[in-house]
Image (cartoon, rainbow, N blue to C red; front, side, top):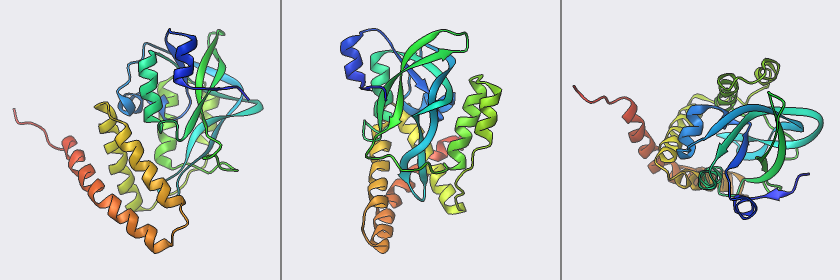
Length: 245
């Protein structure tokens, strides 16, 4: 496996820009912008050989059961988008991806669609968060990846692979909660404070993965989500309210 790398480690070695290889929801330009209000200097599609797209990062079982990362896989390949950004912008990206509580950064060599090689950092699930087997992601999350892949001009055969992936089906109430929470996440990311959302999801994940009785988990989720969803609903109204001319 490629050596573990962090943004600060790379900064010590190289004071120039950082290349990140996006393979998940960050393929979608709206999500990438909203995640941490990132400024991308350059982007180009590419493929990473002998690695695969994995959905083995443990999430929240009832909300987002799994998230994407890369895993070594001889003979396979994962396509994505090379993103060049400053050290400062990359630190913002890491902050928005769970503050190093979810992913580690692995150094990989990506081949662009023009045949050039470029070293980059990709996100891979931490061993402490890694599930033994992949678990299908939600349709919401999977559609972000599929749409992002199309908008990024990724290889049609790879997009076909994405289209064939199974997804986790959520109920109507969970879909509403998901919509409000992730809309709120985009809001806080867009104003430069993604850690508010990442810490909320960390708390929800802790409750979900704890050994507490089911009733107590339910009460804790209600206590946490009631004020959060109220705020999220208020923020969501900003899309509905238009100033009068």
